[in-house]
Image (cartoon, rainbow, N blue to C red; front, side, top):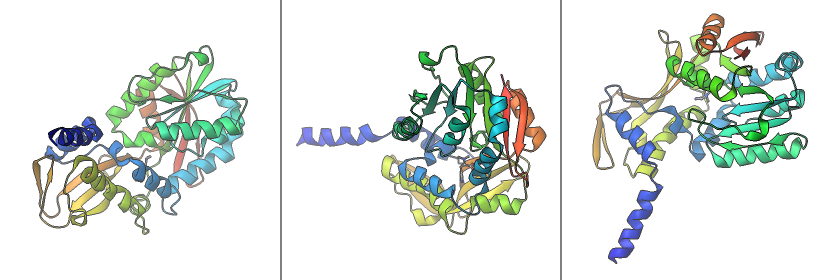
Length: 320
Ligand code: AVI
């Protein structure tokens, strides 16, 4: 029986991601409790994010896709063909086929931390574009990434759509852009999507939809903590909130305690008074000059830029 218990214990420990545990325990112990946004994306979180991208109030995805469709000829001319396209965080992107069709690159290198998503998107591209060599790389693109030798000598175009750069605080965003430059090499180009500053009403609505999908996406993090770290957070004690932080130019997602609440994670007790929050995500928005400056500070020179009529979203092409 002792052995059996030992096995069961081992199994439980096995399934705990030590990085998740450390980020949650450390993050909740900070004076301003916060958990890094990357943990929002477990299987359910990724599904909910896919649902978010189709919401009427969430304009970024359809605006960026529309831009890619409308301006692809110009983008292709400036980005150049017979290259290798390297996509950072390929996820379940529906934008990639547009780019592949217009640029007919020799190779496509999707990089994603989730092996499952990566295999799915690689298989889809493989099937639809038999002439493009697909080389998936399962990796965290914020860390060391080795590009496949098969693309040596090919002109590289990095693709970072979706305004994911906005989920990094500016200091980390410039580090990440420099890291992309190191990965891709001098002479490379980068096509990046950035969400623009707009009315607070529209910004907040994009992150607090009437359908409640973004709320479910945020709350799912608490469910994940309970399930994966054996915690006992009363889910109904927290409410999703989206806030515009004007000083820092970003929409923030928070989980706000609706009453005084106490819970345990890994034998540690956490107490939140009514109104206290767990900060779960930042989504920075950039004006035209701010976006260009961010790229320049990250080692990239902007060479062209496209926006929609309302100037809600920008696609920028830059070179290293
Ligand atoms: C992935 N990222 C660009 C999204 C954003 O808009 O910042 C994540 C998101 N969070 C809530 N809604 C969407």
